[in-house]
Image 1 (tube, rainbow, N blue to C red):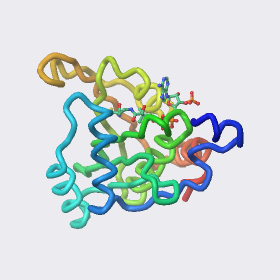
Image 2: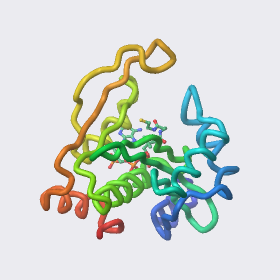
Image 3: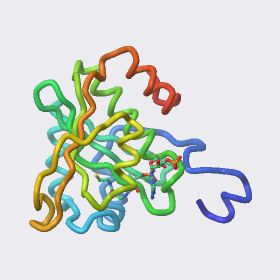
Image 4: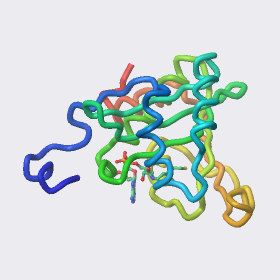
Amino acid sequence: MSVLSRLLGKSATDGMTVEPLRKKHLADVMPIEHASYPKPWSANVFQSELEMFRRGERTYLAALQGRALMGYAGMLYAGDDGHVTNIAVGARYQRQGVATRLLAELAWAAIERGSTGLTLEVRVSNTSAQALYERFGFESAGIRKNYYENVEDAIVMWRHGILDASYRARLRELCPEAAR
Ligand SMILES: CC(C)(COP(=O)(O)OP(=O)(O)OC[C@H]1O[C@@H](n2cnc3c(N)ncnc32)[C@H](O)[C@@H]1OP(=O)(O)O)[C@@H](O)C(=O)NCCC(=O)NCCS
């Protein structure tokens, strides 16, 4: 949070809107992507993912404050599960609930589609993302050895039973703004 925002008591989630990620957002996505990952996706990968979003095979979302892109997230659908493909928040907007909102919106999108579980991979070293996922009830289900750049292991995380009333209540509590 900037010093000015802190003094004014404002946070990134004040006035945050979430909308479908579009090609027009990609110029603002790419700097966040490059700052976030050792092996960032190229603009071509995003374009091909957005094409699959248009065909209904993916969900991609942008979190905005006014016209400023704060973060983005996406999910692919495989069988009965939603697989989180990407979630990243610009450094100046972190720790203010932006990823929580994005992940809640993805979870609701999966629920509305009838998916029964959510899954993802996360670097063993990425304890901040793991803490976020654990809040959403994800649990470690195994390790993929040397998954990242052939050197770092991935933890495979799952959350089953997302259609249960108790999980929907948990989502509403975690992020009332995204609640359906
Ligand atoms: C992981 C990431 C998406 C979190 O985004 P964010 O908007 O800052 O997350 P939130 O503010 O919603 O945080 C929710 C909770 O997650 C956990 N968390 C998030 N960032 C954390 C950090 N740096 N250290 C410890 N816990 C953290 C905390 O439990 C946090 O709740 P709290 O702030 O009340 O303690 C962001 O750090 C990021 O973009 N990282 C780079 C990309 C990345 O690693 N993506 C995940 C790939 S698997």
